[in-house]
Amino acid sequence: MGIGSKIKILRKRKGLTQSNLADGIISVPYLSLIENEKVTPPYDVLRCISDRLGSDFKQLIEESISEDEVCKEIEKIGEQLISALNMNDKNVYMNLKSLLEQKLKEYSAFVNCTFLIKIYLCHYFIEVRDVENAKVLLDTLEAEVSKWKNNNNIEFDIFKLKGDVAFLGKNYANAIKFYHLAENLMKDKTSFKSACLFYSLSYVYEIQYNPIKSLYYCRKAIDIFTEEYNVPLLIRSLLILGANYRKIGRKYDAENIFSKTIELSGENANLKIYKANALHCLGTISLQEKDYYRAFERLSESLKIKNSIKDDIEPESYADTYKQVSECYYLEGMYSDAYDYLSKAYSTLANLEKSYILGDCILLEGKIKYAEGNRMEAVKVVKKALKLFQSIGFTKGIAESAEWLGEYYKDRGNLSDYCKYLHISQNCYKTLWGVQS
Image 1 (cartoon, rainbow, N blue to C red):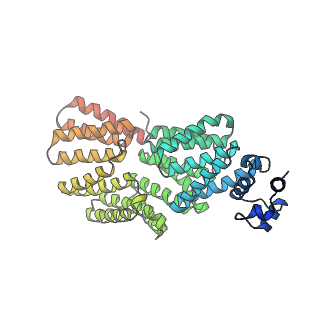
Image 2 (spheres, rainbow, N blue to C red):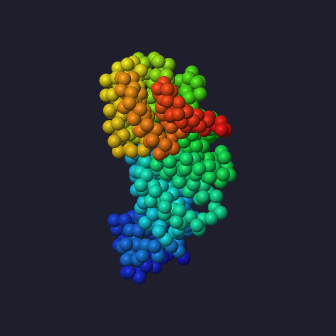
Image 3 (tube, rainbow, N blue to C red):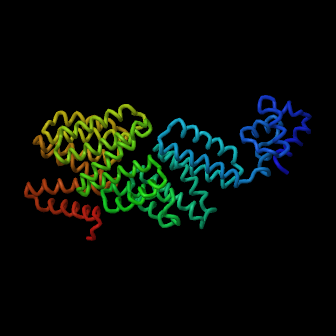
């Protein structure tokens, strides 16, 4: 028996006319179409009808609606959610997130559907960087995943989400481990899901200062995002590509990539953040080339854009730009101004105890103190940076801090400590560049 027929029987049992039942919910002709199985009504309409009939909503729909149909509806909403998150379209993705939460209650009788909804909601929490809610939902998914054994798609999603949560928690080693476990389950390496995984791998390797591996995955992601013309994710991947080119000395290519990113971002309000990030990267290149005026100009423009979209900017993104401006002043010998911008960076990172950007700021503070002649204090500060980098497994930071300390002890004639820190930095650089010990 279809749902329309069930509604018709229940209506007559209640002694209601079509007009009585439809009043304030739908039109009488539309109710007639429903009862004659000509149309399937939306679920919010069904809920209103079931309330008026005094029937149990779940009982009304369970035997009438195919779970496959509901899953298709959820997939459509989920894909729209992910698209809105990629476009940073806050109004749209917040509405879609609320809709999924509503569907989670409505379809609690459908195990497969609720599992699928939780996966999409977990994607949402990860994208908006709500780590705590992402962890809670992921724990729920892992508790339910046993019934999905030997389902590669579900296991792929779980490993990818676990990698994302580890990444947000700054546990980059675990993020890489889970991403590769997901990679091993991939069947179609040209799908959108595969491209998103390649992007995540390129990002974590870029942060870990491993440009060779990052470039490998970045190019794979760019090929797919270009084919699908997914502009937001293409821009994100191009930013990583440019960052890697800069790290391996291809500064001209990096500048071209960042300029292309700015062009693709255009004046789209939802893509402003990428334009700001590209200007930040161009400022970093100018800083490396010792063109401090140009660096300051680009970094200031980046900060201007970030200030215009404050609510959508991650604290670390703000802090990194402040830190780069501070470094401009430090290299120019203007230590007071360098401290001013470093103070702004620290203020932005006030609630983040474990961040590689925080470690970079502490390392820069040590260098400034050393330049001012406060050498003993500088060593304490750099050791603090090294300890932070080691606690989050940030190989590049460990290498740079240990290298600085090694040079310090070498100049002081302390060969024991020099060898100790030299060994640490060399091992880290070997790891970064994929050289076997």
